[in-house]
Length: 104
Image (tube, rainbow, N blue to C red; front, top):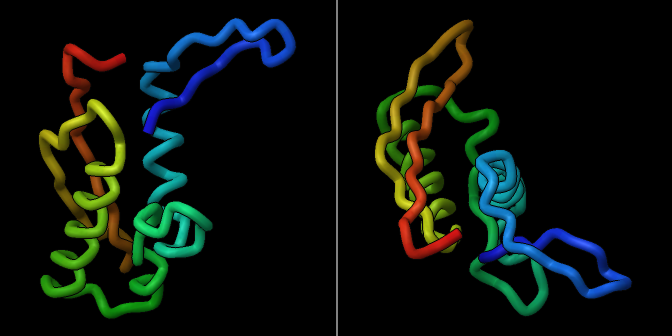
């Protein structure tokens, strides 16, 4: 998936390879239920299914797999690391991404 920014009227577009754009694209994929976009049934994740799940290693593994699948939808981005921690009975993930040199 590539994001272009620019002036629609004049047709001046540039590829947005900014880290903030990648972060927003990943958040969009993770927050979109899989199969909810017409003509793009593989877009999204099943992350919302785990919202009220018990935090255990099984759930953490499933959520990690959803994050990995979401990163695969980002063109030119590789998942370097994924770490989790639990604080106040909430599950948090730190995700390390890197951009491929021939993209963006």
